[in-house]
Length: 113
Image (cartoon, rainbow, N blue to C red; front, side, top):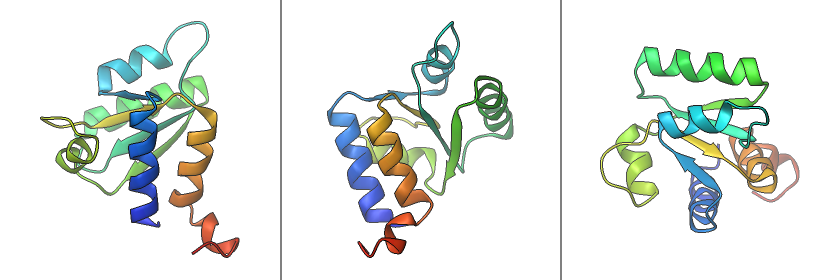
């Protein structure tokens, strides 16, 4: 994972208002007749119960989920929030595709290093 580029793009998505932050808000965004979330990022430091809830909901609604190595406190700091953020939902398809590139190292295959 290209950590610096990933964190920059995540910050841009936050500034653009294309993120839903917090487990409860992500769960609400996933539920409903038409989910508004294209991708969910779960912190590796989240509790097992939270990870299972997120995983089950993403599986049910067919939404891509990644576990990121940052702790909830690191995610919170990265997004300019206080406390801890265990779960982030990306509500923009272009940002979701860009973040996926950095999470799966597809940017190295294209020569963008």
